[in-house]
Length: 173
Ligand code: MG
Image (spheres, rainbow, N blue to C red):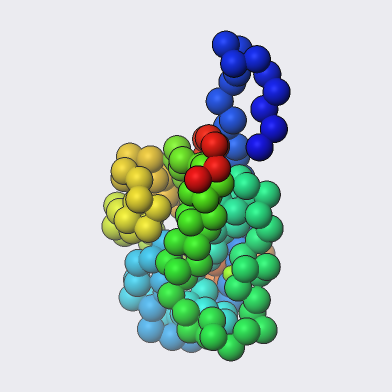
């Protein structure tokens, strides 16, 4: 890592990454969001468990190290990721950050869905993120909004997620 500022004036190497994901809703029994299964009359369709929250956050974490995106690390064309639980993708991103000498400071996930209601599951989602990331729950934010019935999200055709992660990089491990 290049940090040529003289030591007394050296600033923390603070990195921010963002991520976005969307998956289609199809008839089903539950959706998995931020690692939490929520009973619903639809499910998210995708190669893995289609957890948009964890996918967006995986991209955000990878971005703090400019380490590409989730598709680079887990190609959808690879059959071994079929039906995979997405906490594995996020844990892989955590490993990459750690190997770069990074410490995860906080993460923030916004889920965009008409249904199901996220509020009753928010704390469990934050706890799920904290467990996977190995940081405290107070550093894991989960928010939700509807799309005001507009567009594909409004028509309940899909759920989207936006995520932000902040990492402080030190010396590589
Ligand atoms: Mg995805």
